[in-house]
Length: 270
Image 1 (tube, one colour):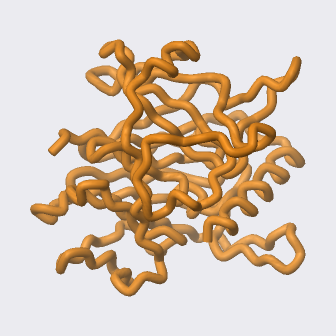
Image 2 (spheres, one colour):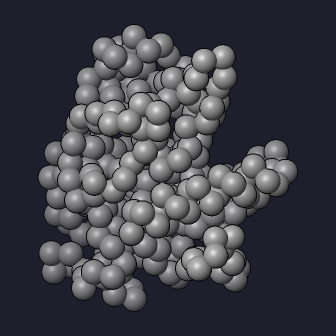
């Protein structure tokens, strides 16, 4: 499944380079509960000699906690995820092949307390940040516990808000205190792939839904719905598969495959 996502990321990058993308600001998501929209002020880049290149192929967020409490969480993006972390929890992300598998050279601090603030920070800030547990306990759409209405987990049904499942139906937090449900709704037809012999399975634009439930009570504790795919077009599973739980406190779901925007659900540590 993740190989498919890597291929699709390459496809979408080619499409974005071949068309003129609109600069119109995307519509703001509808949010309920302790979920915040984060928009990074610059694209993720890597310095190669005198050139800056995009960090946007098979990418995932890597997050640390700043030693400066006013800065909050520190974000970087790492290129070259191959799916080997799916079903695992990790706090170390070694670089295997520096020519392709590398971190961005820019880092941002996100202060999620009170009024949201995002600012660029230094590499030293990043290096001294506390490494946090990242969890990738995905439930796929083909798993037996996934039904047309939702995901059945520990004898409870956690309903989806969108009409359709993507490749990833849910993501469970590391200590199994919360579950995030992913779904989408679209009236668009599935677009053809530019790669011979490969067919897209999801429409390139519509709305994505994030629903977060507390596993001890079964109650929904946060949700969001947001537009995806326009103007460049991409499948919603690219967003779901790049989502991550940080500890049991933060669920992060990107809103663009280049990870320039994301939703963060912020919950008390249990």
